[in-house]
Image 1 (cartoon, helix red, strand yellow):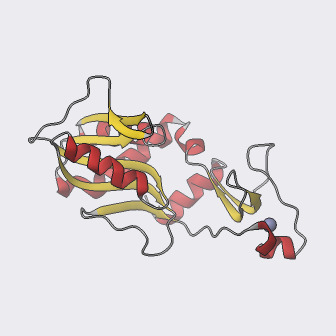
Image 2: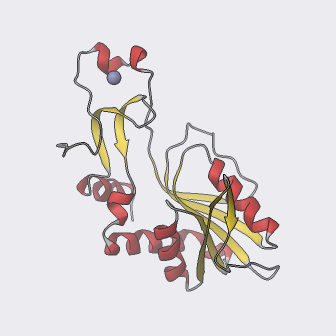
Length: 193
Ligand SMILES: [Zn+2]
């Protein structure tokens, strides 16, 4: 999938909106991104999984590991496209952990898959979970990279399908507020693109 095809898919799904938004963090932004709105359509999730798989095949992963909840659907679809296991870790007492009988060992070549990377924090934590369990991490991948330029640094190869630049502002420093544009809370009601 090309960048334009991905952007079109996100916009048609209402997963990427342009305007003036108040995010759950309280910050304002000219854009709103919600991957779940693309992934709710299984054919779209499947296509994104195939797109990730095509970009990471050379890493020869034998298992996909994703952090719950955001990474579960795309991790499953990437695993399907690669023909490998797809497992997930989840928060327990504030830390990501493998549960439900999922295991890794030294023969496992682990690809860590996320929906969105912003700071890379949960990705790095998932990489550590895989290593602590005995797996060999061969790379990491996400649908969207919305980090500040250069913010994502890992000690394994990293690919993302779509880079989007979504600045955020404190409300009292928001240039859109300064222009008098009304602010919208995403998800509170349908928003025209
Ligand atoms: Zn604003």
